[in-house]
Length: 319
Image 1 (cartoon, one colour):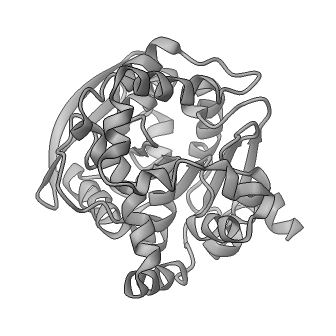
Image 2 (cartoon, rainbow, N blue to C red):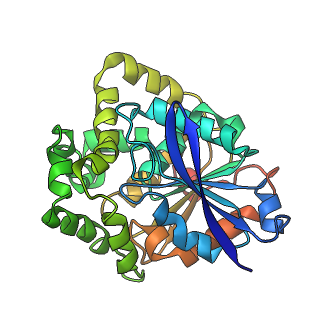
């Protein structure tokens, strides 16, 4: 079975987003119906929608919708709206504008953080949350502040990213793009395979500083949200609403940026069981280096009945 990737423009919150859509030739395929018709993919930093293309090719019988999130190349470089409330509002409006009925929300890295928060805010809008290598944001911030499993030292770029304009200027130079490329290839797991041509394609989408300003602003705005009392309190209220859909956390165990030990505590802040699915020998970019393993996990989940309660996870049992 083949699939064709087509492209649409969808306007949400006065911002035009590019969406790549991979539709199966047989719309009534059992995998599609079990997923209630769609999988909505939220990419990480700095992949954009292209990071999901290998998975789309692995699963031609599944309908995928993969946007370039606000500020990424091919979508509008909006001047604001990079806080997690606006970004999750974008996702909610995108589901409406695409006409999706309770899609599976598949998310990775920064998209994973948005996925966690979206599931707290709008659980009735999705059928399942699948997160790939992203700790629950509240769990991650706590670990950074408490120096749990050296998490504070694992993400050293967060502080430099707070400097206005400089990071995006540096990272769009020839040397900077080389550094971005290495941020992918050096973080590959021992058993993974990183498509270097695809990595170069992703990196070279950022030709000018303004192309990277939006993605870097995700980090800046999240720190601002935590610093300001009112927005921090608003986010804490969101976290206090337990997630009410099944949640699966897929984890490449050779992720050097995010601690697996810290991630396994995510269920405490999600307020619900979280199924833990470790992948031996795979690094942070599961979507790029092991799309076959990711496809296997997603097929397993799509084959499960939506009516089944979330499985109890090893992380919850050990807590």
